Length: 170
Image 1: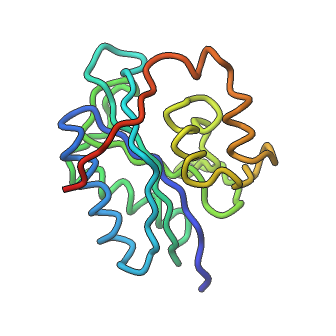
Image 2 (image 1 turned 60 degrees about the horizontal axis):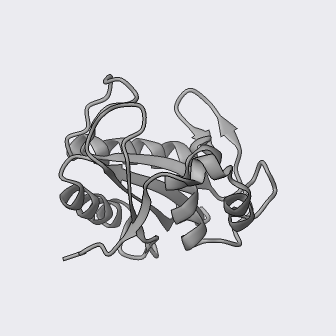
Image 3 (image 1 turned 90 degrees about the horizontal axis):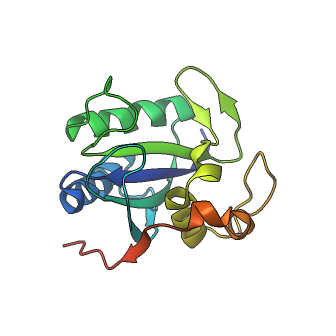
């Protein structure tokens, strides 16, 4: 069983600091102390698609021996444990949202797992922290570096409230 490099997007707009800390703690607990967890800076962004409090967003990467399907299942458990309820509309307030963005260079489209995640190419709050964390990483579909994709992202998507914040991890 090999080790795989995983990238996940993390977001919260309900008690953001609390749930971002809990998400990172839960990732460490779920994937082990040797998972080599790395974190991007945290960004504050406006809610998209609904009126609500601002989101805190970041990207985390870690190593795991689990399959992408097992990783996705574990991420949903973490969300549920932290108050996320599925079945709500897509654009709604949430305690925690953790999305599997990338798993090695895999391309998978199934009912339960879609990687690479479309949001990488659509939203600055996903692409910017991913570029901070791993700018030279090659996107498996576009075959461009994450940094290059960030540079090429439409200015209309880049504008708006995407503000890097000093996050207090204590």
